[in-house]
Structures are given as structure tokens and as C-alpha cells.
Image (cartoon, rainbow, N blue to C red):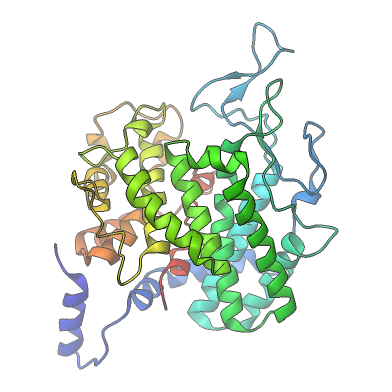
Length: 388
């Protein structure tokens, strides 16, 4: 591997610079302009929560998050009957307003908190706080801390455990809340209430049958469940859940999902194998980024039969560099929109001091403004994930 940090260190000596840049400083330099432009878009906006939109098809109340299964469609032979599944094909008539509102919150939170980290301008945090209060504190507008009615299917179910993947967009919200806490700009009583919401949601995720089913799904849904549990446990300082997730990563997620060549067979068998493979790799590296410690670095973990995040990155980065070499079927939708700023490549670059990964990540285009792509990008503001 090429050690780009060491190269930077040598250059710093040549140019009489005494300090080697940290990971945070390096990524801040690379992402700073983009972050400030994003923050400009998401400053001075009014909060929009689940109570702003009501679907008559929801079995829940106005405070309940509701969504519908993406790949479920009316039966053309029997239009009034239960919906049928078309894997990989998103039904544009499904209710998505709550998901879009949550993604909006995620982008507001991620951009403003990142901009504060770059500039230490308190206005970014001040602009963010009303959104946190609206979603997690205010009785009139807050969301209930569960996902009982997510990814419902007409004529079949009012909600499913698989719908828990919708709240991957709360992960960077929780990261942003950590920045707000560090800033000292939010009233302690309000911060406690926000954290209580995440404690309640974490308890639901880990105890309700929907959460347990999502945990045991066996593909990217299990990875994303673990990434959420890890993030919310980090915010609420739940060491029990953090340690449980580390064991889950080592003993279940990695050995059961990854093949010996580093690929993910369950993602490769889908109708969008490319998009799902990089999505799952991003999630795996996100889990490792949250859970790794000096004594227990998941980026360095390897199973007895040689499975590791290095294997996953080596498998996938060759096709991120050159998608034309992809030997599997093309995705049925959005093939042309991948790859984008895949966080797995950046986190791999930092974890392994690999200049080639960093060069690859720098060459990738920014996340496009397409709903389907953004929906599958839980890590949009990587600066939040890197220790300052």
C-alpha cells in the first residue's frame, strides 16, 4: 500500500511545516467548499416533520412515520387486489413524503453540523436546533420513536421490520447531535430530551419483533440495522449495545454475508447487484467507523477463513474504478448513476493509509440530486464520522 500520510509528512518537512495533518484536517480541506455550499442550501429553513404530511393509507397516527414498500405494485390482472412484487423497480405512486422529510432532516443536520466543524460559526448550530426540537421534542410535531408503519404493502401488511432501513437517514442526524452537544449551544434540558428520544428508539429497535427480524434479515438490511444501533448507542453512550454490535459484526455480519472473494452473494443475486453491493460495503465500513477502537479495530479484523473489509474493498474498488469491467448483470434501474462519493472508499483510505483509495475517492462525482441515489446514501457527510 502507498502511505499517503507518510508522503504528506515528508512534504511537510520539505516545506518546514511542523505538524502532519490529521484525517479530519485532510478531509476538511478536500470537502470544505462542498460542505459550505451544502450548508448554504440548508440554512434558514423551517422544520418539516412527519406531522406535515398525512397518508390516508397509513394505519398509524399523525406522529407515526409511514412509508410503502418500494418494489410493490398494483396487480394488472386484479387492480383492486393485494400488491405484487417487482424487485428493483420502484413504484413512483407510493407514499414517500415522510421518507423525504427525514432525508431533508438528515441533509440539514449533516450539512450544518459539518459546516460548524469546518468554521466554528455558531449560526450553523443555531439554524439546526429548531429542526431537532421539531422532530424529537415538540409535542405537536415530533415523531413517535418507532417504525411500526414503515414499508407497508397494500392488501398485505400495515408495516414491516424491513421498513427499519428507512431510518438509516437518522444516523447522520445522531452524528450531528453529537456536534451540537460539543458546541454547548443547545440547552441541556433540550439535549436530554433529544437523547431520550434516541434511547427510546434504540430500545424499540433492539427489542421489538420488527427490529429482531430486521437484525436477522441476512443481507444489507442486517448491516444497516447494526449501523443504526451502533450510531444511536454511541450518541446515548450505551456501551452494552456497542459491544454487542462489535460481536455481531465479527461473528455474524461479516462471516455470513461475505464470500471468500470479498463479494456479497445476496446483493449480487439482486436485480440491482452493483448498487446494492456498494451500498452494503458502505454500510459495513460505516459500522466499522463507528465501532472501531484502538484495541478493537474492525477494519483490521479477519475471520478464520480470511474474510475482511480489506477483501470487500479489494473486490469492489476494481469495479468502482472501472464499471465497464463489472462481470455481473447491470442494475435494472439507475445503473448510470453509480458510483458516487462512496464512503467505504474514503474510510478505507484512512484506515489503511492507502493513497490509491484516496485518489479514487477524490475522482468520484458528488452525490447526484436523484431521490433513489440519495435514499441509498446513508453517509453523505463523512466529516461527521472522523474524529477532529
